[in-house]
Length: 384
Image 1 (cartoon, rainbow, N blue to C red):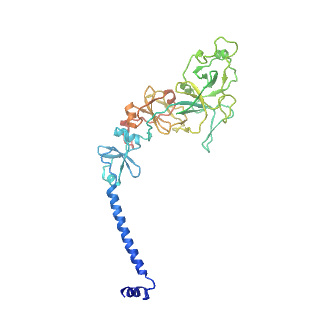
Image 2 (image 1 turned 135 degrees about the horizontal axis):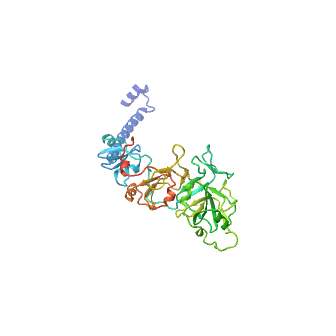
């Protein structure tokens, strides 16, 4: 009777053909239970997984991805992981930091080395090569490289031919044949390059080896030749007898043009880590190196000396920065093609490079120089 009265007062119908009030009551009960269960689940989750608090961790990362380093109980934003590790003095990874802990911690000014590599590979790189593209042509619209077809040497603002030097890591070169050679033209001088290295090409040598006047020539920046070891004339082609009739039977490589050339082999001329010559197929993976105002890269003649324009204009072969030992000092070579001075191998370990692998300085010297990586530089405010 009570249900019939409630139904009549609310629905205006006492026949009880349907009972929508029961459905509403069940919905209310189920909704209340669901809210209670969600509240209990949220509380349990907060208890089991509280907001991240890394304690006294030297390097932390916020939920928004910002990296901070702890200096004298203050958290300082840093430019990159390399700077944070240099300040912390250890190759540690950032620990998660919650918003509450971030707001409660004392904050300091931003620190670090702008332009330092973000990540370093624990292993080194091999297969270093300095390659020459003698007739490059930049398509300003697409940014892609092609080759010249007219073999007309053009010159840059420094007077060097507008050839491109490409530094590659992990390159697999084809060694030149015992009687294959390249004539490299650097303006006033010509050099003969073979699988053994380079030697200056004078008139007497030209006649002795029977080099024709119309032999193809590869224009190149003068400093590119420093990547090849210089050898005496008699060491250039060991299998060519000194006492012979006629010319030496040399085969001269032609520069690539639009990927097609008349002589072997197709590709770029390269100097390997030993300073000897090889060739490699052109690759589109080599990216353009950034230039400073005036279109010049930066370069040192040796670690710690004054800077001069760099030679390399493209770089490729690395996914992460690597630590190397040139024999004259330690460097970090970034994936973007910059080389950074490092004071010692212990600093490389702090950066996460896990030591240094041998690398040829004559090739790495062609790269632009980035900022040096050491603790004192990392502790400087970014605003300076």
